[in-house]
Amino acid sequence: MNQTPPTDPRRLGLGHVRSWVFDLDNTLYPASSSLFPQIDVRMRQFIAERLNLPLDEAYRLQKHYYREFGTTLRGLMVVHGLEPDAFLDYVHDIDHSVLDVAPALDAALGRLDGRKYIFTNGSARHAENVLDRLGIARHFDAIFDIAAACFIPKPQPECYQAMVKRFGIEARRSAMVEDIQRNLVPAAAIGMTTVWVRADGHPDFPVLHQAGEDLSHVHYVTDDLVAWLEQIPGAR
Image (cartoon, rainbow, N blue to C red; front, side, top):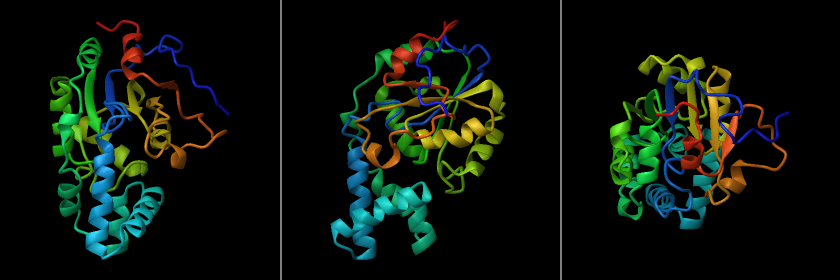
């Protein structure tokens, strides 16, 4: 059981990687940012209003569906027949200006060889807003959002298969970067190199990550994505 994945990208080598797949929220910007907490609050408010629940009960249901279905949205769709667009429009109506422009990340991505994609359980519009605010949109060839996945979220294996098929990605010559380690399990299963951006400040860290858990599907772990990318051998 691999409990201590290497942090140094020179340890195993990444010369085989031709496609880089990045999660969005809490991966390309710090989990300590005040962006995702806005989404968290908006989800709670939406559930309370739609299901006529007090906020504390809405919060309990929100987290229950998140753990059970991979996203709160999927639980609302399966259990309550919710129409997804209304939910996505509401929860992503937030202030993206709290994100700082990220020149160091911009430079690190610019030195990184290979095509780059976003793979998110959020909406494409939200991803575009985040990438524009960070100043890194120019590096990404495409976005695979929850609608492209037919609203089947990570970590369901079928959405990974749909993503690599959509972009013509050869899994064994690709890497996936993600802040939630359970979302890397299906990526590793199809042959992708996996990178876990671990952050104790992640809003759901205590729920999703337990001491002593199996990390054999994680090839690299880092708490600083930019510094990790800067170490990759052969980057321009």
